[in-house]
Image (cartoon, rainbow, N blue to C red; front, top):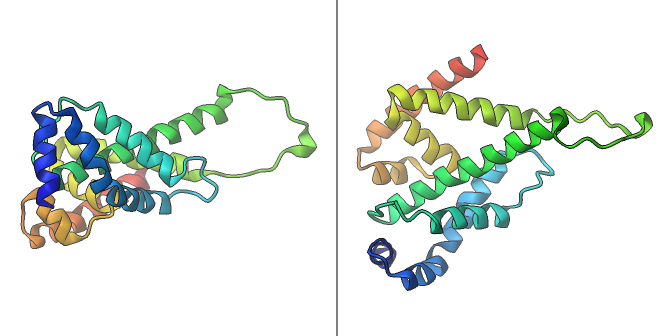
Length: 184
């Protein structure tokens, strides 16, 4: 873990070779985060775990403005980027369903396939954006737990707060989100 932090600090300082040495050390953890995210997606999702990791990696590699602090900070940002990738994919699917790509199909070949997951993910993303306006730490807890798959203890470590605070924030954030999503 210390090696990851040291490489992040070197990368932040401009050492481009640090990123090359960092990726093999974090790749398995990034795949675990991606699998957590993908478990919540609909069956037959076009984005695979490896593609999610690769897209998050590309966004991480292009994020030169991030002032990396440590390993926990890196994985928190990775979880947030995976959320963004999935939300972007959901938006793309909804746009296509609304005529973004017209294709002539015979009526007999049409199968009714309800895909509420894209809408649900967009609604959750919007609710999290709203939550972040007045309770940013609660939003971070949800991102880390739901999208990042972190445990309560790992989330506390990333945020630098106690386990009890994370439990409380997680509980109240879930209740608030349920109310918010039920209203939509």
